[in-house]
Image (cartoon, rainbow, N blue to C red; front, side, top):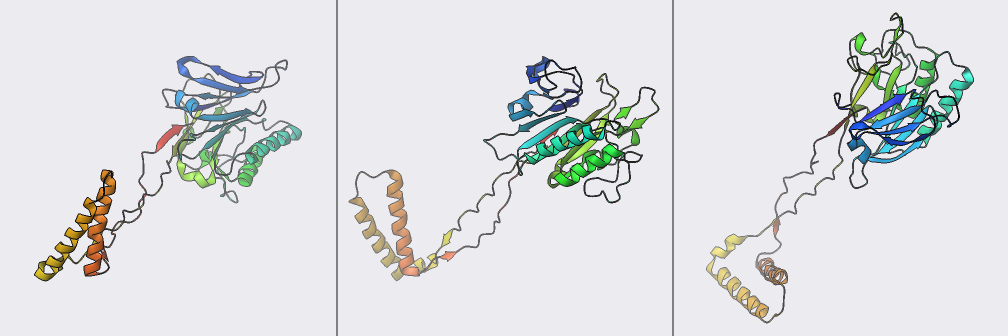
Length: 322
């Protein structure tokens, strides 16, 4: 995780029963969800979090031995909240009932996410999408790995279409070797079956998705890394109020200047009678007296044109890897 700057690492087939949170080496935290304690040790999913990801964790839910959900963000900022779902889908050869149960549960989980959240769905989906995106442009790019979509791919595509997700691994142009995520034990079969999908509305926040073949993860799957940029929402700064301008050239006329000076002197004499005032209050009275006299002698002040427009003052974007 340190080498690839990964903040949230999704794990599939952990084979840990029960659910909970545990501390790992180097300050990492592991959230895991599996089968019941006395059940056979199979399936299982988890999320390994860096310190920064753990500090931004708002809540998490162990849905099943195949699905875990966590929500990240900070209540004190206007950064968009992110909900991450890690899943381990049944293989393509699994029964129809098992697949239906999984996608029904996954769809129910997606429906329970707040609409304003950025949704990231990732994991071992066991779904081949292929490189043909005809009639699938809504949720799929044109750079899928070479091959033909399988049944799991159809199911995953329907899920993405229903819940407004786009598949990141098919959006970016990479070499074929950087798209493949699984290699068979005999080394002859290579597929792209691990995926990262994101809310279509936030497609521009996804900067890249590709495998990292150099990562030593002791698996027949390659590490798949998604680079995400989260833009910080800051309010527009209101433009400064327009400064008042007066026809002060009239003070060059001796008669006008004499009348103005006399009136101003009388106003200041009245201000001397005021006692026990704070400095701010005294200044407000002095300024008010001057402006009142300027209006009296030279009418309504001219409003200067405000040349400044509303601007969005950005802050450095935060990039996280998943």
